[in-house]
Image (cartoon, rainbow, N blue to C red; front, side, top):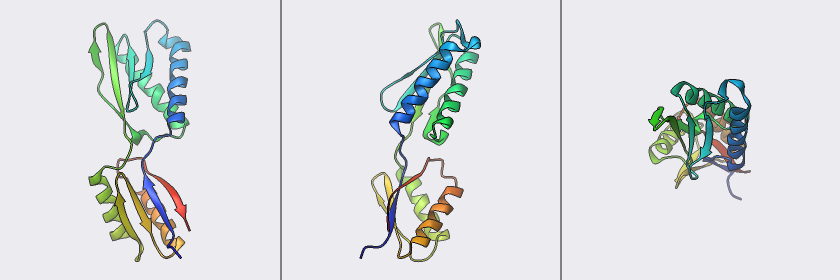
Length: 164
């Protein structure tokens, strides 16, 4: 019989992200303080979002609205990296990079944390941009999940593929 296991991943729910973008766009078009400022949001490929407005203040306010919508849709702000406002012709823009997957150096930090602070007998294995965690007891896996939820690795972590 195989040991219980789960995977640690960092993924974005693209449907929820689209919902957050659409809600932000709708709010920017209807709110009084954004009227006439040219505020907008659009997706730039799969890995980025671009916010635009006529002034730097309004584009920063649009970013706050977008962050609020991400939180309400259950998307961690750690999955988004907003750049500095930059002037582009008559408008200001903010590029927001969307991060998915666990980078190698972060995966090594997570492995080390599990080895140092986790229960004995828990094994980890880096598999591309995710980590597989196995143990003989389900309780050990649950304590690893609890420990990782408290820790801060600057990456939005999800725990999937739980097999007992």
